[in-house]
Length: 418
Ligand SMILES: NC(=O)c1ccc[n+]([C@@H]2O[C@H](COP(=O)([O-])OP(=O)(O)OC[C@H]3O[C@@H](n4cnc5c(N)ncnc54)[C@H](OP(=O)(O)O)[C@@H]3O)[C@@H](O)[C@H]2O)c1
Image 1: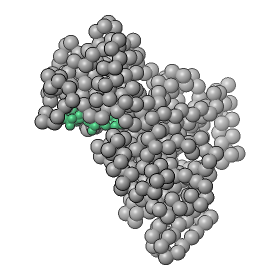
Image 2: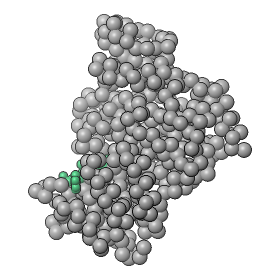
Image 3: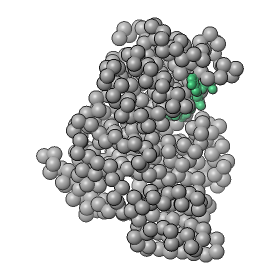
Image 4: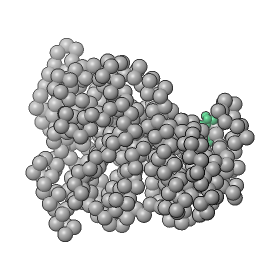
């Protein structure tokens, strides 16, 4: 691609679109320019010349001068149509839309292959942390055991404000929205969907495993109460919304998102506000931690810029792990230890714990700590939500990942490799 001639058709001029515009404006030497911007509401006030804007997607898609589509809208279904149409016209695409990506990964892999046109999406997972390209390039020949972390800036911001400033959940959420950290639909953040979409994308790049988001258990922070906070504080713990994709057996990967108690020895204990943290555990490089801003116009815009820059050199993802790890399967057959706060005595009978190690009940506060399989937890998710129960993984026990078994799993993976 001619370095002087990158003409961008931009979809969306909200938090990230404007962040990108701003960054490009401050990089006068960057060999790319925005030619046209497609938005939804023409009546809205815009901070730049109105001649840029259109509401007709085809003014970008069918414009022969535009050789890169940057998709930054907040509607996943409409985004998929835009991205698919652009790829079919052999226009490379950069997107930040994790929901659209996670829900259509298989189709998007096929479209890229059929039209030999790249789709890049670094900004879709963990904002400014360059984790996708790191998994693709740095870890391309490395055998990964696990990828985990805080993947949602908005919930981490809310949990931090509640714990540090005693803000109510509602006030903390409103602040996150005002600062542009939250998705237009906040349920996507606070119920753990946004984090799950990112986890599905990273599971593909880390393990070569395509997992549909509907299969993955996610539980969010909407039910988090002052009692849960008090419980954590008394034990010197913090609550974080943590994602896990881990090989629990050489051929099985467990994938889930839920609140987790972590102590001060945990690498993400000090990761606060909208910052994200990703932990990668691998056979040879061992444990590595990546920390950076997970949301906001400029941090996310910078990841988009990096993809635009990569597309100048025709960079594309190779998805090597998909060819290597064909034997890997998704599983929910693991035993987790969780804390569960419930409201009425009779509710406990509906929770299929394998074993309860701690039980407390007073008139206003009841909780149990015990082990449960992820599969059963997933099956009763509706009941947990209906009864407004809060759950948190204690992080202490996953069958197959207890100290001894984890060693065994790692040993078997290493033996397979060597
Ligand atoms: N905000 C973040 O920190 C962050 C971080 C990582 C990834 N992302 C992702 O980045 C994307 C954009 O997020 P955002 O926070 O920038 O959203 P936003 O502030 O709500 O802006 C959305 C933009 O999309 C436009 N739009 C909606 N539907 C459209 C359509 N069919 N055609 C053309 N334009 C359309 C809207 O137009 P109008 O201006 O006319 O309403 C608006 O400009 C989302 O996929 C989000 O998940 C965001």
